[in-house]
Image (tube, rainbow, N blue to C red; front, side):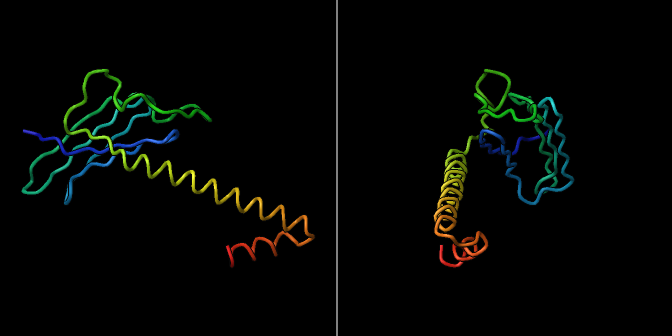
Length: 133
């Protein structure tokens, strides 16, 4: 009889992350179909069989430029299986990382404009910012 491994998931507006928590897995099989069908199987410790399949909420190959948050991981509105767990902290960390990256890029852009206005070359500004930023 096949068991279900713990599956952790998180999302951003442009990505969905799935982590199958099965250390020392062997004979791993993963299949992702563009329309959102996902299948996994593997052997775990003592050759116990693990498998699951999911019908995801949306396509894993969205139209170019299409972004957005899924309402849930699965297409079905029923309560998800207990082995599926949302990782809130990862979603928050990813969101924070994106915001920090945008802030650093904005700071670099502002410093570049200030240096440029003072008459310095752009290469000097970028080099100076990287050394002292």
